[in-house]
Image (cartoon, rainbow, N blue to C red; front, side):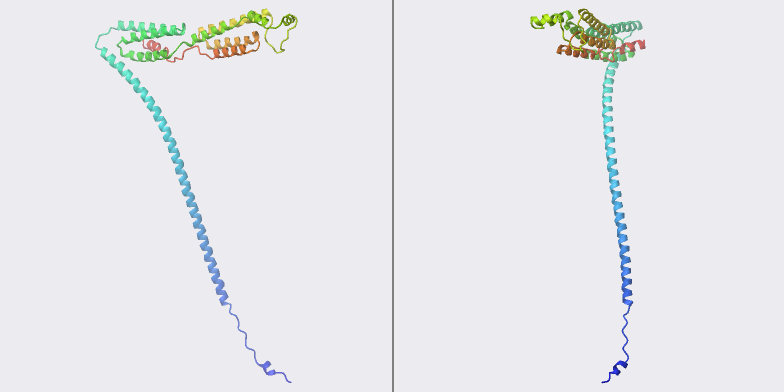
Length: 324
C-alpha cells in the first residue's frame, strides 16, 4: 500500500499572524490613563495641601485674634483700675477743694474789716507757741489730752487771722488734729505701764528660795538637801545667794534702762535693754511655765511702739516757721 503522497505534496496554508497593534494601542491607552491619573492625583494632593495650609492660616489668624482680644481685655482691666484710682484721687481732691473753698469764702467775708499787721504777727506768735507746747506735751510728757487742747487753742487763734496765707496752715492743722483725735492713748505710756506691771510681778531670789524650801517635801529630804543637791549639768541657774542677788539687781537695772529708753522714745535702747533682761531670766529662775510666760511678756514688750503713728505731726509748725 503506497503512502498518500499527494497530501504531503500540497502546500500548507500560511498561519495567520497575530497583530500587535491592538496591544500597542492598549498599552498607549493605559499609559495615557496612568499619566492622567497621576496628574489628577498630583492636582488633588496640591489642592489638599493648599486647603490644609489655608485652614492652618485661618486657625493661626483666629488664635492671633483671640490673643489680641485677651490683650485688649487685660489692657481694658488695667485702664479700669487706673480709672478707679484716678477717680478716688479726684474725689479726695474735690473734698479738699471744697474745704479750701469754704475757708476762702470765710476769709473773703472777713477781708472787709481792716486788720493791722501787728495784731496778725502777735496771733501768729501765739499760734506758734501753742503748737510748740502741744508737740512737747505729747513727745515729752505723753499728755495726749494736753496736746489736743493746745492744738485746739492754736486752731482758734488761726481762725481769727484773715490773711489768705493762713489757709494752708488751717488745713494742715486740721489734719494734725484729726490724727490726734484718732489716737486712743500714747504708746509710750502703755509700754511703761506694761513694763511696770512686769517688774512688779517679778519675785526676788530670797522669796523664790523660801518658796522652794517649803516645797522640798518631808523632813528627811530637807535634811539631806543640805548635804547633797542634784542639778542638771546644763543648768544655767545660779545657786549662790550672793550671785542670785547680784543677778536680780542686774535684771532690775536692765528694766530701769528700758524705762529710761521708753521715756526718751529710744526704740533701739528699749529693745536692747529688754533683750538683756530676757537673758537674765534664765540665770535666775529654772525652766517652768512661769519662766516661759515671762519670756513671752518680754517679747511682747519688745514689739511695742514708743511713738504715736502721726506722720503729719509738726507739719503746721514747720509751715508756719517757713512762712514767717
